[in-house]
Image (cartoon, rainbow, N blue to C red; front, side, top):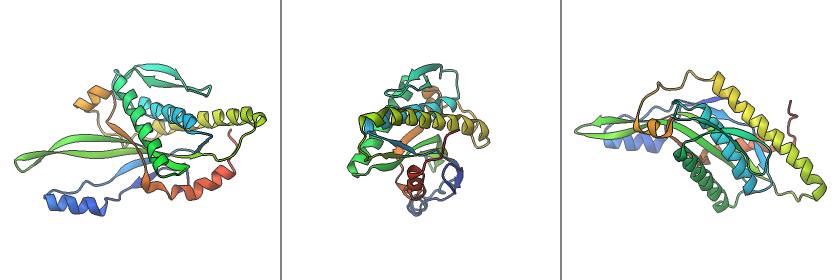
Length: 230
C-alpha cells in the first residue's frame, strides 16, 4: 500500500511456526492493524528524539484505557509544539528507553534512515499441559519512517527549516488523532490485567522495525518532493 495508508499483516514467521510446533502448541495468528505515519526528516538525533517522544506519547495517551492516564500537557524540546501525556512514570520510562534503543540501532547500523515502531499487545497465561506460558498477541502497530538529513544548513535557512518542521510535526500529530478515532473495531476488550493496571494502557514496545526497509523506496521520493501541508 502507499505511504500513510493502513494495512493488515497476517504473516506468521516461519521460525515462529517451527518453534510453536516443536513445543507442541498452536502458533499465534498474526492479525493486527498497522498505521504508517508521514515520514519525518530532521537535522540531528536531538530533534528526532524530541519528535518521537511527542509522536509516541500522543498515540499512547489516545489509546489509554483507564482513568489512571490523567492528561498533562508537555512542551516539545526544540520545537514550539505541545502534546498530551499521562502522569504515569512507567509509561514515560518505557517511551524514553524505547526511543534511546531505536537511536542506538540507527547509530550501530551507521544509517541515517529507519522506521520506529510502536506495538500494542495483550498478554495472557495459557495452559500447556501441567504448565502455563505467556501468550503475547499484537493488536496494533504504528510505524514512523524517519531520516536524519545530511544537508548543510546556513543561518538564513535555519528559521525557515524550523518553521517547516514544526508544521510537519503538527501534521503528524493531527494524523494520529484522526486514525485513533476512525479505527477502533480491532481494539481488544478492556481487561484489568497487571500490565494495564500498571500502565493505564495495553502493554507496548518501541523498537527499530527491521522489516520495514522497503517503506523507504517510497519515502525517499516524498522527502525529495514533500507535499504541501493544508
